[in-house]
Image (cartoon, rainbow, N blue to C red; front, side, top):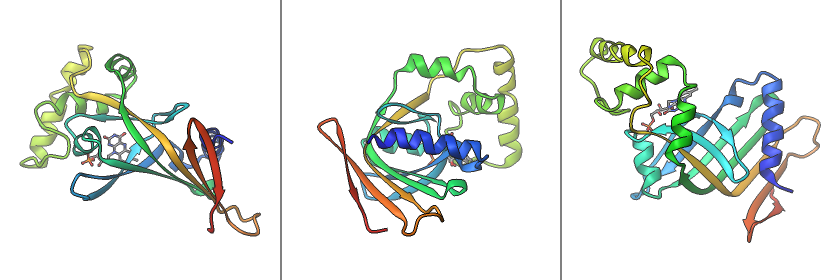
Amino acid sequence: MNPLTALIGDRERAFAAEDPMAKTCTLALADQFGQASARTLVLRGISDRGLVIFINQSSPKWRVLSAGGHYEILLWYPSIQCQYRIQGQAVELTDGEVRQSWQMRPEPGKRLDFLYHEYPQSSPILDRDLLIDAVMSRQTLVDEGQPPPAGITAFELAATIIERLDLSPDLEVHDRRLFTLVDGHWQNQVLVP
Ligand SMILES: Cc1cc2nc3c(=O)[nH]c(=O)nc-3n(C[C@H](O)[C@H](O)[C@H](O)COP(=O)(O)O)c2cc1C
């Protein structure tokens, strides 16, 4: 059984149940010093290898991911009482695809992407007034239909370990499985929940 297929099905069930968590994921990273960090991100897609996220190269998470830091993705869908934990290799995607899909991004996101060149994501800024002025001044670039700025990028978080925990109330005992990709084939073990 391919756990990514199960994940796609579970996520569809979560969307159908209008689960607000269906759109997002939690990306946890460990940097080269073992420092942990976690943040919510929009989950942009699921490929046949893993999860796809779009981020900016000015951000701290890009620095960790591009330096080969370890990741774990956490997905929790309360509507269907199902959790996934996913690990593997992060692969930066080609620029062309990312730049094309950037055109679909809502305007507030586009303004921020234009901002990050001068003010990197997650960097401190003097005050909120300066931030608002700096962001809103980028609206002209959006209105002019300027091409996507440098620094937008995406990662495919190719999965080699996937754990699924099913807490459905109709199960007598919670169902927890560990899937491991070995020589291109998914193997699975039952875990004590
Ligand atoms: C619901 C939700 C969705 C988010 N989606 C994104 C996203 O797709 N990309 C992004 O860079 N930050 C997103 N954020 C903000 C991140 O959680 C985080 O604050 C930001 O990316 C900076 O993270 P970093 O300093 O670890 O790089 C989202 C936050 C929330 C609450």
